Amino acid sequence: MRVRLFILLIIVLLTSCTPQTYTPIEREQAVIGVVNMKEQSLSFIDYNTKKQLATWQVKQPITKATLLPDGDTIVLFGQDMDEMIAYTLSTGTETKRWNVDKGVTDVLATERALLVVNEKKGTVSIMTFDGRVTDTIHTPPSPFTIVEDDKHRQWIVIHFKNGAISFIDWGTKQVKQTVDTLDSAVSGLVVTETDELWVGGHGGGATVQQEAFVHSLVDGRMIARVPAETMPIQFLQTEQSVYVLCHGSNMLYAFDPKTKRMTNALDIGANPFAMTKAKNEIVIASYDSNELVFVDEKTLKQTKTVPVGNGPFYVFFRDAKEE
Image 1 (cartoon, one colour):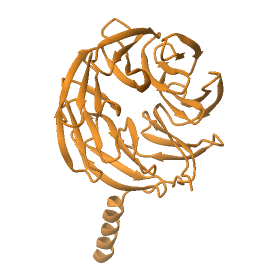
Image 2 (cartoon, helix red, strand yellow; image 1 turned 90 degrees about the vertical axis):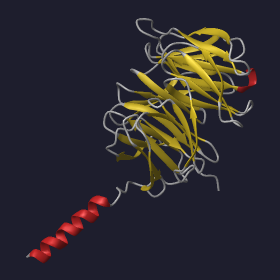
Image 3 (spheres, one colour; image 1 turned 60 degrees about the vertical axis):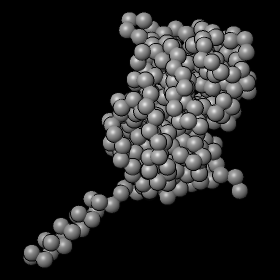
Image 4 (cartoon, helix red, strand yellow; image 1 turned 90 degrees about the horizontal axis):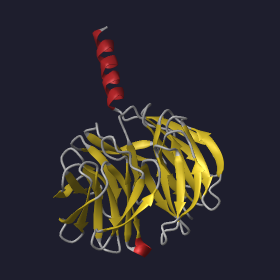
């Protein structure tokens, strides 16, 4: 009896230590990935059929996922997590776990490393793909989002508190300049052809943000304020336009990147939090309606809605592997 009990205990221990295996997402499929924050899951949608492929019940307080350059590895993280977890999509298996301090708000994947933004510690850590930290860059308080500016060989950090932007030199790995911007900024878009950075956010205190701020990538100065009501929180760019997603007013705006004039607008979703470009469509995560909204980028017409998990908060596109 004792032997059987001991064997059963060993089996339970081994099972509890074995990472969860999920439904594989084939590398040959073009997919939309969604982080569902309320239910702590990932939804995967076949881009071509717009049908759900799988739901991964991760049960970790994840807020975002970063796709690595191989197109088959995602790294999951969240502000309340003390680790980042990597999964291989094509096998549905966990491959790595890296210990981090709580407070991670963004992870930028370059060809050689991960740049890990920690809002609580006020740092950007440069981490190899095997989890080794090679450099730690100290920034002004509350770094929140990081974007890459290849043309000027710099990383740009958007700070949530105190309305600031930091410019980090690739070579020295030091903050070379910090400039003021809007309060409670959450995102930025590098527009290379005009040497500009578009910045958006919620606004501070009782002041609701009604404009996107445009800064120079060269010297950081403010160039323009673009009317985009209310709470412009996400950007993306196509050949024709810069698109601005407004969280507070449920609006998607298209602007000419040179003139800054609005060219189109669409009332979209219910409490939209994020968007991504997928081929010739814009895909928006509608938080309160638990769905993805597909929009034709040229006409700015809604083409389809697809149900996902509870509280879609972040969305990304992974194209099919070309043979």
